[in-house]
Length: 134
Image (cartoon, rainbow, N blue to C red; front, side):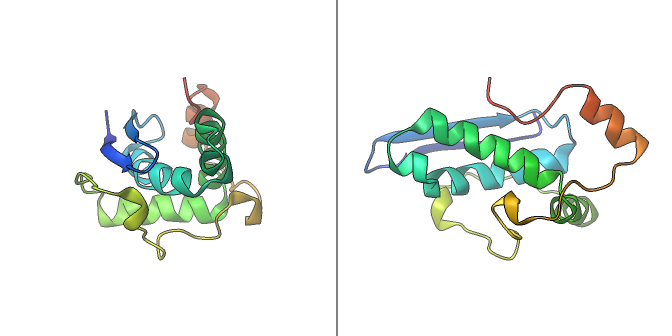
């Protein structure tokens, strides 16, 4: 495990807890970004607001996977690597801990397409480890 979150009070109004473990097949920085972004994006997603929790989680995972494959997403990964990724502290309410400076041009549809890959990244991506729910 490279990153995780434990949010027993994720959405008290709906009585929803959220727990996540990110293995980091894309590296520790990717796992860290996902652990920070999934709770924030999930709670704001229209499908979540409509009560379709599984649909919202699936969409958030796919959107995040797409974002990480854009130029802006790759830049964010490199920033995380350069500054060193620190372990996530337990978040009492992920939606309240928004880091707007970290979130660039979300949703990913606003991005300019996939970023160029080097050979190591191609091999890793080809290994079949996209960020999708089980």
